[in-house]
Length: 406
Image (cartoon, rainbow, N blue to C red):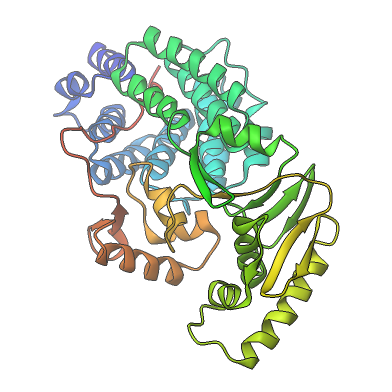
C-alpha cells in the first residue's frame, strides 16, 4: 500500500473526509475509489458515494475478497443511512463471514452493528439483542466502541430499560471523546437528548401531563391499570390484553379510561368509537354489541358496567386507571416518529419499518406534506421524505466507517 492511500485511510478514520479527498481525489485505482466513496458518504453525497463504492468493488481483483467485502459493508452503511431497508441482508452477512474468515474482526463487527441497527429500525428488537451479545467491544478502537454503545443504548431504550441506556450512553460519551470525531460526539448527544424528551402523555381523571422515558418505565412497572394508546393494549400487574387489531374496542377502552372513575354517556362513546355525529337506534345497538365484546376481552382485568347514562370501567383489582398516550396526537403519528430521526426515508423503507403497505404510507406522506409537516426530495425511485430542517443547525453526517484498507 502506498503512503497516500494510508494517509487517506487514517484521515477517514479520524473523521476528516476533506483531508482524505485531497490525497485520492484524482486517482481511479480500486483502493482510492473505495476511500473516495467513504469520504463522499461522510460529506453527505450518498448517491456519489454508492457509485464510487460499486465501482471500487468491481475494480478489485478476484483475489481481493477482503477489499470487496469492505466495499459491501460500506454500501450497506450508506443504505442504512439512506433508510433503504430493503438492501439485501444476505449480502452483508456474506461480507461479514468473509471478513471474519480473513481475520478482519473490526470490519466484521461493524457489519454486525449495521445488521443490529437495521433490525432495530424494523422493530425486531429481540433479534437485534441476540445479535448484539455476540460482540465484545473491549478490543475495539474508540470510534467502534462508541458505535457499539449507541446500539446497546438503542436496544435498551426500545425495551424501556433507561438505566441500561444511560450507562451505555455514558460509555459512548467517553469513547467519543477519546475518538475526537465531532460526528460521533453529535450522535451521542442526540441519543442523550432523546432521554430528556417527552416520550408520552399521561391522562388521568381528565388531566394530563408529559412523561419522559424514565417515567414511562416506572409507570409500566407500577400496579396502575393502564390503557396504553402507544401500543393499543390494556395492561395491569403483568397481564396484558392486546386490542391492536380491534380499533373500535380500543377506542371504547380509551374513552372509558380517560373518564374513570366517572362513566361516559352513550352518545360520547358512539362518537369516539364509531366516528358518527348522528346517533340512532342502530348505533345504540352496535354499541351494546361492542361493549359486550370489550367485556369479554377485559374479563380478567376489569368489567364494563352499564349506568343510567352510559358505561363505566370497573377494574377488578387496581385502584387507579390511567391512559398512556403518544406525545403528539396525529393520524399519522407513527410515520412522523420515524421521520423525526432527521434522516431521509423512502416510502418503501417506511412501509417495511411500519409493517404496512407502501400505498398506505404514501397516502400518509401526501397528507403530511399538504400540512407542511414533511417534505420530499428527488423524484421516482430516488424520492426521499424528511421533516423540514431546523434553521441554524447542520445536517447529520454519516458516522465514520472503519478503515477499508489495511
